[in-house]
Length: 322
Image (cartoon, rainbow, N blue to C red; front, side, top):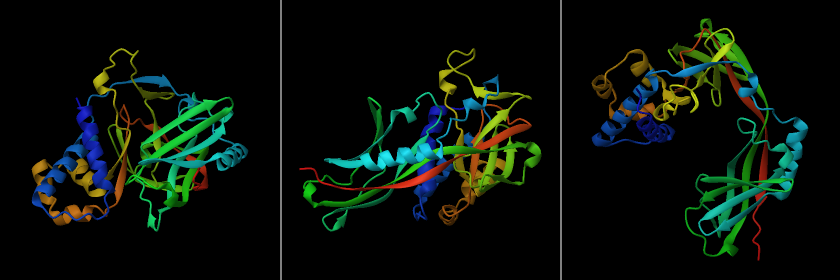
């Protein structure tokens, strides 16, 4: 049985390491610590574990939200552009914008609108105003208006708001559809077109599918029989266990790690010997595979799908309120 709490904690550390860009590792103790984390995490990811799932009849609406029409996306953006603002409170900056409440349906699965920081053009005097990644999101409903809020921590506390000037650019993605492709295990090794993107199915191992290419946001619908798919157990299902309710659905893994740990089955000692400081540093520029896991073994038939969006860039000029 996989220790999911341990897996989750190691995953966070591993993802931080995989996001580093050519960070130089110089100390042997650092090398050993990182190697141990990478080997342990990737072994957990590739471990099949004790699969517990239920088979249900496939219903597209369980996976695909009703997308925006192009007219709805444009209408929503115009309202956001009209109402968007940024405000400061000591060590945080708050972005808020309104959309029509009729376009927000909390019953739909997935996010119809994705809003992320694109570019920071704010200054504090002559210096750039340093802003960290967003830490909190919220919303508020008033009559027919639905307000979206995102806050970002500042590097330092602002003591004189009169010195703040410039603008903040947000990337706003409106879900307008999905690209899908129906596949079988005979497609292993092939290049697959998913909309305008190309992905390659590297391998299928038990309950994992290994992909490379434009794999961001790609997910799987796994058919365990002709018309039934696998889904995780919920609290009302017989055999449900709270400790095993956490599942890894998608994670990146360096190509060499997949080959060494997943295919060659190197022991920790063999992997540790292989991963010198030089190799570990080089790894940070290496190609990464996407490992998508399912709660059941991948069936003979499956669907890969990926949402696609209409993107707008929203520029908010900071205006100090007296």
